[in-house]
Amino acid sequence: MKIKNFRIAIVIILIQIILSLYLGLSLPADARVPSHWNLQGEIDDWSGKWTAIFLFPGINIGMLLLVIFFPSLSPRYRKDPERFQKIMPAFINILVFFFAVIHAYTLLLAREVVPSSSHFILILIGLMFVCLGNLMPKIPSNFYLGVRLPWTLSSENVWRKTHRIAGWSFSLGGVIFIIIGFVGEETSAVQIILIAAFLLIVLVPTLSAFLIYKKEQKG
Image (cartoon, rainbow, N blue to C red; front, side, top):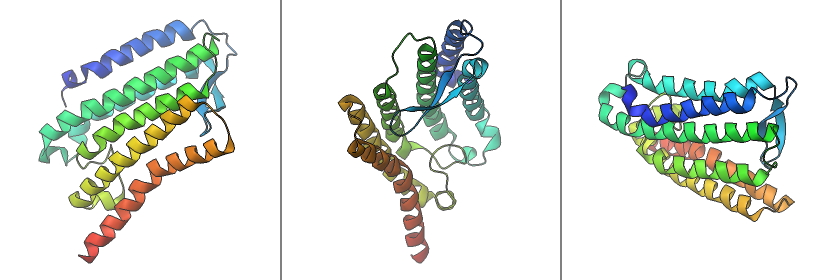
C-alpha cells in the first residue's frame, strides 16, 4: 500500500515522537509513568522512564508498518484493493491518534502537569470506540484488522454481518464510556455499567459471529 495514503498517521507519529522526547527526557531516572487503567478508570500499572518514552511510539510505528506492507502479506487484498486503500488509512489514523493522545497524557501525569482523572481516559476510550464503530461495517475481510475469528474468516457473509453488528456494539459501548466519563461518579452501579459496556464491545460481535456462522452452516 502506498505510503502517501498514510500521511496523516505519519505526521501524528512524528509529533508524538517529538512530544515524547520533550516531555520524557527531563523525567527523573526513577520516574513512574502510568501505563494501564482498569475498567474503573483507575491506574493499576506503571512503566519506567525509557519504556514510557518509546513504547507507544513503537506501537504506532508497528501498526503503521503492518498496514503499509499489508498488500504483500494478505492474499485477500488483491481481491478488492480499492476498498482496502480507502478504509485502512482511516482505521490506522484513528488508532494512531488516540494512542498518541493517551501517550502524551501519561507523560503529563508523570510530570505532574495535569491531575490524574479517570474521567478523561473513559471519555477518550469511548470516543475511540465510537470512531472505530463507524468504520467496522466497511472493513473488508482480512487477517489483521477487525473481528478476526475462525467464523468470520470462513465466510464473506459472516464477516459482513458480524461487522455490521460490531459497528453498533462498538458505538453503543463507546457512548456508554463517554457518558460515564462525563457523569464522573464512581459507584458500584457505575462499575457494573462499565463492565457491561466492555462485554458489549467484546462479546456481542463474538457471539454474533458464531450464531451467524452456525445459521449459515445449517442453511
